[in-house]
Image (tube, rainbow over all chains, first blue to last red; front, side, top):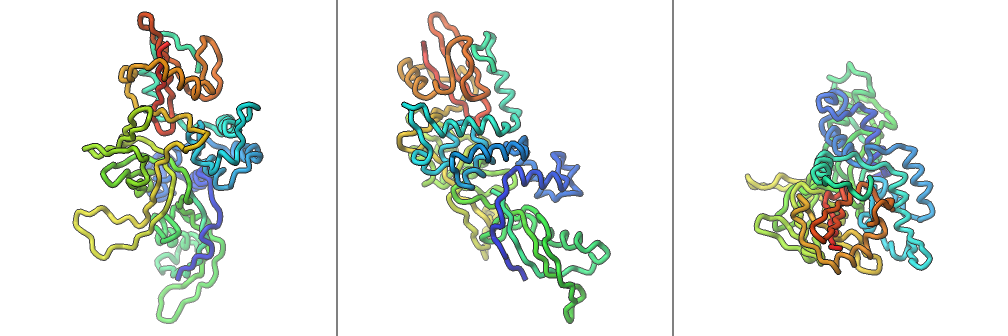
Length: 151
Length: 265
C-alpha cells in the first residue's frame, strides 16, 4: 500500500516550514486558521512563531550561509545554528562538534573563530521575538539610578 | 528538525469525494491518513508538502472506488541525532525531565543524561549542583538539550487504566553541561533569580576573577564606555555606603535563566 521512496528527501529550516505554513493560510489566530490548516499544523505554527524563525528572511539566511563558508561547518551544524540562533558561546559550543580542533583559537594572535561565529550570528540573523514575561521582568528590575550602559 | 520524505502510496479514493477536483480530493484523503500521525523510523507527519505525480485511477474488481498511485512529499518532524533543540520543561520526576515543544510532548531526559552533580528534590524538581552554585530546573523553563536517540516503541497490547498515554515517538535527549577542555563555556554561571534582592552576597576576589576571565570579553564596567558584544544587557548600579555592587543581568537568555555575576568593588 505504502512505500517510502526516500526517507530523507531534504532537510528544511524552521524558517522554510514557517513560510510553507503561512503560505497555506496559518495565522496566530486559532479561529482564523480553521478552514485553511488543520489544528495540528496550527500548533506547529504557534510554536515556530515563538522561535527565531519568526523574524528571519531568505536574504538573511543566504547571507549567513555565504559568510559562514570560511568556518567549514557541516550542513547539520549550519541548520542547527539557523534554527536556534545562538547568541553566545555557551549555546554554540554544543552545536559544533570538536570545536576546539576545528575552529582556531589563538589568544596571542587575537583569533577566536568561535567568537567570530557568534558575532556573525548576532549580526546577520534577526533575534527572536521578545517574550512577554521577559519584558515585564526587565521593567521591574530597572533601577531608579541611571544605568551605566545604554541599551 | 523538519525534513521531507518521499512516499509512494496506492490510495483508494472514496466515492463521496468524486464531486471534488481530483488533486484536492487526493490531498484531503492523504491528510486524513497521514497528518498528526507517527510513521515508524520516519517521524511525526506535519503536513503534505506537495504531490509529485498521480497515476492510475483504475477501479479494481469488487470495489466501488478508484485507486491511484500517488507519489508525494510529506513534511516530517524528526530531529537528527546530535541536534540541539530548545524545549520547555513540562514535568519533572525521579526518572528525569519531560520536555515539550508545544506540538510534540514526548521529549525525555533520563537520569543518566542529566549533569552528574544533579539531585532530585522531594517535589520532583531536579537541582544541578555545580561549582558556582545550585541551579534548579523549574517547570515551564526553557532548556537547550541535545537529541541522542529517537525511539519508536510498538503499541502495547494492554494498558493500565491510569497509565501514561502511549507515545509512539519518544525523543531521548541529553542535558549538556560545559565541555571539559581548554575552551570553557563562558556562561556556566546560571542562577535563576526572581529579584535582585535574592542574589547571594558577593565574594570580592571570586567575583573579580570571574569577571576578568569570562565577562570582560563582552562587557565593560567603565562609565560611559560602549558595549562590546552582546545585546540586551543591563548594568545595574547599586550604591550602599562605601560599597558598589555591580550586577550584570542578562535578559532574554534563550533558556530564560539569569546570569548574575556579582562582585563587590
